[in-house]
Length: 390
Image 1 (spheres, rainbow, N blue to C red):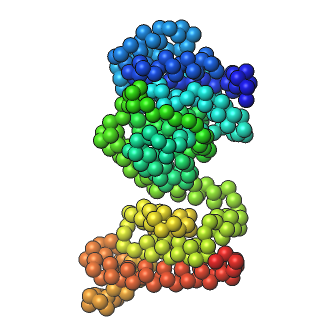
Image 2 (cartoon, rainbow, N blue to C red; image 1 turned 45 degrees about the vertical axis):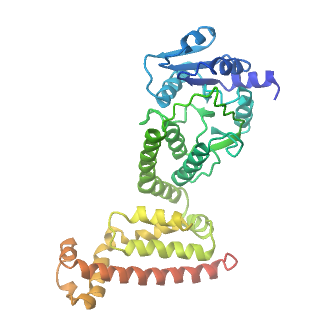
Image 3 (cartoon, rainbow, N blue to C red; image 1 turned 60 degrees about the horizontal axis):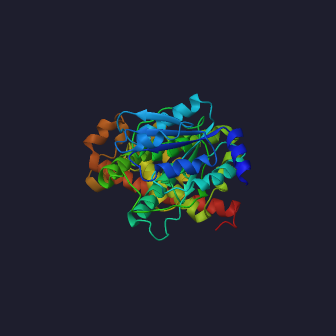
């Protein structure tokens, strides 16, 4: 795209550029000048800077400046910037860091990518983290973040930590719970949960130790990020995956759901059979309250089919619980000299409490036996239906 084409596209798409800044006096002017080559729709959020940032911003009367009295974190600054951008009528915001690591001449990359999409999308700049000069801790942190983003959303990206991004302002969440660096993880995960595509676009990156000022605090911020990911993973396992499964089921006929989401889902017949076996084993196991968490975690660990494993784990739905308790106590009775005549009394969790060892042994036998039977049965069925998928 030529420069006039980029400028016109930015105007037509109602795109603004957000620049959060905190004590980046060495690079701020250069970043703003570079962005001004493409647009004057710039919002700078001065997050309580104590250096010469205020004086530098005084040279740019044509841009919008938000002055925050004290530093409260990048996430807080971006939230305020998003709110201001929507008030000014913008539909998209490109965020660029003010520490000089991003090149303003990569703005056309985001604009072209947006124009090629039929629907709204969240774009993240993909830096070359293997190039010389990139700190090893940054490369490791990015791989760490990429893995958890994939776990939480099912989307594989090469870079999830870059601050050079394009946000669809009317599709991102309205409320957030994190104020600092971890905000940039929260927003992409929760936006992906809203079924907005999240994609990478290639960008350049510059790490100049003489100019760059990083406010990332390794211990404190990594701890905050770890806590956030723990919360997001829990929500993923207990709500997002079941929600998506139910929504997919509702949108399709049972025959279509069975064909597209089960029989023709990713993986060989053997993988699908193992997925069923895993779900059944955990479903029958005496691990009440942790079935979904364990099923999805182990399915991810062993690269099995998460949907099939989750469905199979629901053999322990409430209507089936009395039968599972009865069978478990019956199977466990020969090993601990327990009472095998369990049908003579009321089946409840009090009975389990009083015969705990008997129940644990029996439920383990039941889980192992049923997982083998249903796993083998599934494999034979799939081989008959789709023999070429081995």
